Image 1: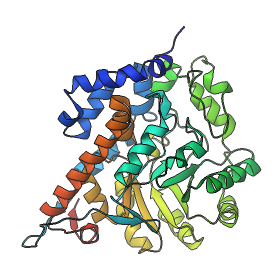
Image 2: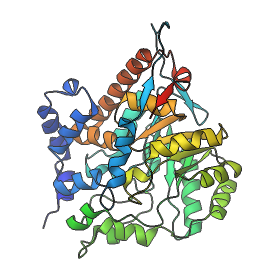
Image 3: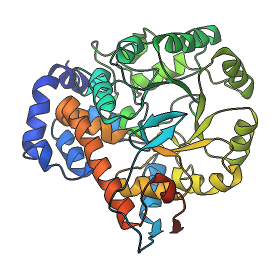
Image 4: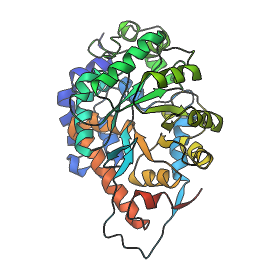
Amino acid sequence: MTSGADRAVRGAAGADADAVDDVGSLADAECLADLERAAATVLPPDVRDFVAGGSGAELTLAANRAAFDRTFLVPRVLRDVSRCATDVTLLGRPAALPLAVAPVAYHRLVSEDGELATARAAKAAGVPFAVSTLSSVPVEEITAVGGSVWFQLYWLRDGARTLELARRAEDAGCEALMLTVDVPWMGRRLRDIRNRFTLPAEVRAANIDAGGTAHIRPSGASAVAAHTSEAFSPGLTWAMVDRLREHTRLPLVLKGVLAREDALRAAESGVDALVVSNHGGRQLDGAVPSLDALAELAPVLGGRCELLLDGGVRSGTDILRALALGAAGVLVGRPVIWGLAAAGEAGVRRVFELLTAELRSSLGLAGCVDVTEARSLRTVR
């Protein structure tokens, strides 16, 4: 039997054009929701659920978005905003936007070029691309594209293999390591369980040469969840963070921090940045929305390490809200996958074009000439 994932990969080249036809052209996509609708027309239901879904009743998934909707900005006036600059420094390097591509697994599920198309679009936009351990293209091929690449690391059951993977990413030219700390095992993602979601044979975790259970359709379960349970260590501790810090020269980022106690300990341990994240609502259902956690953590940390916000960003105004609440920048995941599914590399480029236009407009309307001024905006929540 051919799974939806099989159909997604085999039809990727033609699907891109079909999706764009549904919105007229890429130029007719005026917001990220337009690209979401375009992607939905070409993705098989099980792949669409894999991308869109959260864990449990998806309360945290919805709350991430609701947190933005209840956050209002207090704009300033009578300022010269003839030019509004969106460029920043993230992890010590310049970026054209206060934004990086979030680490999302298996881009080849939605487009034949997979992470290579995403990398080319990110390079053109001047933003970093955080490549997942579960990328469907090897990290060396992605860094060869030439953009700014960060490597997201899961701690594997074999600790020595984890450190080898970190060194491999460093040798490949990655500019930062991002250790995900909120996945001792995968959350119960009911859409995937009900779909008995599996990867097609053509899509593999290229960085860890993994196949096996991720390609075997289980009874009443998700094959991807079974694979991560088999591959990832549930025993990740602060001692391993220290071990990784000693092992690499790269900036070290922890992704998945929500509690102030953990944020303070991370800052004390010399971590360079934190990603305030609940994994896009895909781990603990009922976890605090990422934006609410950011609002608490930023004043507590007082700039002791860089803060990035992940979860629910859907517009340039959302980026401005995150900046006003203390973020150095944001990660964007699902919208990149929508653009990739809708029109390949061109679709991802459109995501960045829209976010750039929206952020520049929002900056000016808020009376900010640049991202630094945005961080001084007041909010009403």
